[in-house]
Length: 160
Image (cartoon, rainbow, N blue to C red; front, side, top):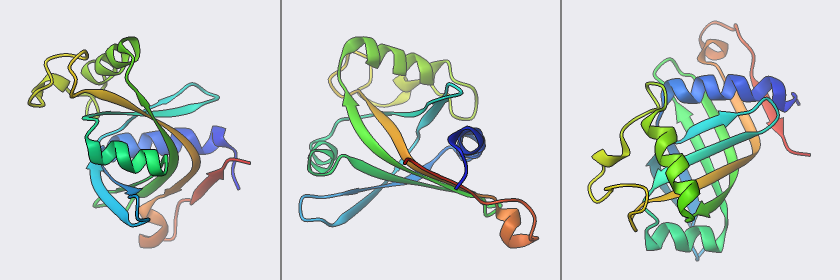
């Protein structure tokens, strides 16, 4: 198992190049439910945190209340894949919502975008906007070259 310091930068690079991921939560009956999300990741050199700008719908809130975990799976046409298994926490306070709004608005392409393009999102203080914090407990980075040419390295990190 690799150290976070070697897996996190490779994960962020791959995730940010792919941008969109399939995200799975578990409903109150224990059934998986998938959706597509657009996280942005912050790597401090010691800690990796992901953020999703999202509408806090009753379904998302109920799923995360039942089980506060989410599985994120990125896949690119080059067969690159990376996975983050995370604990998810809602952030409804205005300072955090403003910071995450700006993180996306000022973020580098292709992960950065103007959140106000989403209908009903007039600013970070709108009721239909929340920040979802992602704290990974497991990461896996699987370059497509491992499958296609036998080159590259699969990296995995898991919290102790």
